[in-house]
Length: 254
Length: 254
Image 1 (cartoon, rainbow over the protein chains, first blue to last red):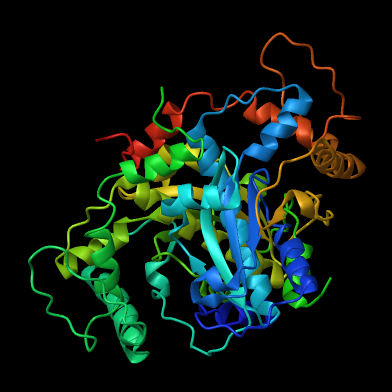
Image 2: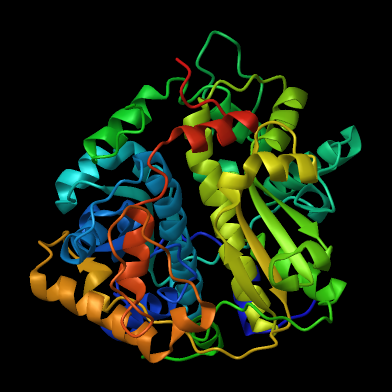
């Protein structure tokens, strides 16, 4: 494994959920934004809203960034150029979400290089209508992810990840063997149990039907946790379609 | 502007379209993957396919990574855990595309820290069916972006970006004034013209209807180029819906 400052910064990433009150300086924020802006965007179809209302933020983080897919500001440019947008909303979203994510990932990495910790908040798409009202988002702007940021007041370890052979496939996608699947599960589950992660966060997801929950924090770990999400949550796509529509994206129209 | 190795690496990013033949070492590839894997994923809903068929690759890059949204491998885990996936395909995609993008952005940054250049290829979603056949992708795996990689055989400058006030909004999304829009356009257009970017790539997008094209490479620049995309391309969402469906994602079903 080759090491350098960039690779070490990435390797040391962990989400921070406890922050010092001190706010990162404007120069730090500027540097994070400016560096992140150099990502290889499809066409800069993103915007970043910064809130400093610490009291309202998750974990009372001093900074909360809402990173949005944004077609609005390019529409304004097209207007000046005498062009009418014709691309369908679904395609615009697919490209704009990418741009928002490249920005968000870069902001996290740039922040960590300055000793500033952060936590991604992935529920933004499901709170889009609320965020639109809160931040006065125009149509064609859709919140993709939020990023809490500040100086860490805790020092957790990096979290487990899949083994390499469950992530990188050479030449083609292989048949996933029982052995591969089980080793991936073991790495994740043993890794999180060793860190006592779910107990510390008291983060168990409850079982929604009458099945008894046989797990305690002694054996409840990552694969069970995530299975309870995709095995119980977001059955109906209407919820997300409604949020998109509120933000001016209609992906169901003819 | 605060500088450090991470921020400098990001600031120096530029896409590379000319590569040396020499292939990055396995240790370099490993380091890139391992560092990038530490991104703050929703739930590791991504996979990376590596091709070394230089002759087939865009720009004859020695390495071509296809970064996919991948729900297949977590389905395998759920099966072992006795859970059935119920989450709708649209929601899964929204989360999985994020995971793929975080991975892709990290790979690019990690690569550049090792002197390895790259170029994002954003058309993967529109070639999904072909890529599925080529790489034997199972259902519920959707190519989001491809990343050509290798040692640069050219040394282009970083490309222009929007001014900060067109990207970062404090407190709320502002009314975009004519001044803001025009300055953003100027920064982008003048910046690209100064680099003679579109002429060098011979990358002008033609006008599809009978309107005369009044632009030459002396004044054709970024805002006109991108306007010609979103003003002419992808009118119908069916094209993308078909590609998604071929990959096992039906976002139109009830």
